[in-house]
Length: 515
View 1 (cartoon, one colour):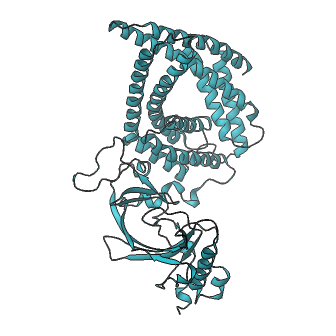
View 2: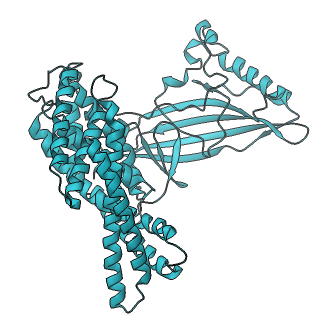
View 3: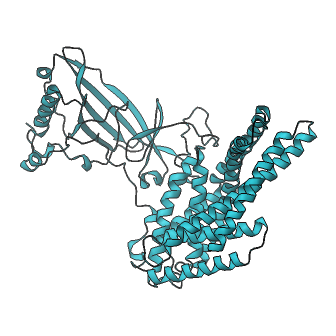
């Protein structure tokens, strides 16, 4: 029998991650195998044992020359069956990019989809850096009634670099049953356990690899060097200081940004709204908590983020305008807005939304966006000290929040009656709210007023959105009149939104007085 050096290893000892060719049910038990031992005889445990032909899947792992995807812990996989992305919890199928440029000059060469990982790639070229062959052999145990009672998979992975002779291998067994815990499945599990551990040291027998609740093996992808955003430990700000607080907030917001960026590129619902919020939070933190980090660096980043925020704001405004039409029509009495007019308005606004979303995707493919992401990573990694970098974090936060409260008070007191003034008040309230959110659970920072700030911001937002809708309906009515169309429905919608403006403005003034 095999000696101790070939005993099964724990699931976390190998650096590769390869799924079976087709996603199977989650195994109830897995065993990592380090040698070429065969499966035990399974015929005693079922009326019929069916051994299927091995299925071979060849995949290419795509990355940049400097392995930025590996450093981020993700794998971009390409095969004859399509493209998939693995973030560490199993592959997810990828479709084609919506409107991205062709990255491969040779029309016969494979073109990897980039949108799901462009936030890491940032314009770098992709190439196939590893070849992976997965051979899966299934053995099905069938009862007298013809039902499959259990299924055992023997999976072997061979992976190599196309530019070298380096080859790495991994192998595991997996048991899947009908979740009913049949006697056949339990017997197979005991047989696999005994056979996998046969010849292993006593320590491995006491702590066998796999467990009743173990999922399919999902070891981490092959990783490159640590990403720059992790930074040099020797240069990290001292814990409890102002600089450490700001860097921690920025690191969390960067994670949110990395998560939402691919969703915007796929044009998913609410993704633009989420991106806009993350960008606003980043810019608010950089503005309110000035002084902890180098001001020249933070101000440059704020300016870079502002440009993408502007494009995202246009796209979000187009979404809001489109979505308000149906709600406004529902508030009108009777059938004052006929279906044809409503359909025409909705189609026009959807066309505008799609164009604005495409413009945002273009902005996310720009060198300016890539530079902003690089500068954000660099800011987190280097944490260049500002004049208040070493100040106590609690004291720094309290003083900066007091400063921003005074700013909001001045903006509120100096407001006039036009929409531009209300917009400035709303921005100031939102900035303070985001700064309070960033402060976390620290005591004595005034978080009891967060709900008041949120309600003020939302009410003012309703006023501004309804006002924009009124203006849009008026412009659309003018265009329709020039074409000789009936404009009655446009007028009804404009009047409905005008009533919303009047009602919400009164509410907003009450909240402003409470501020």
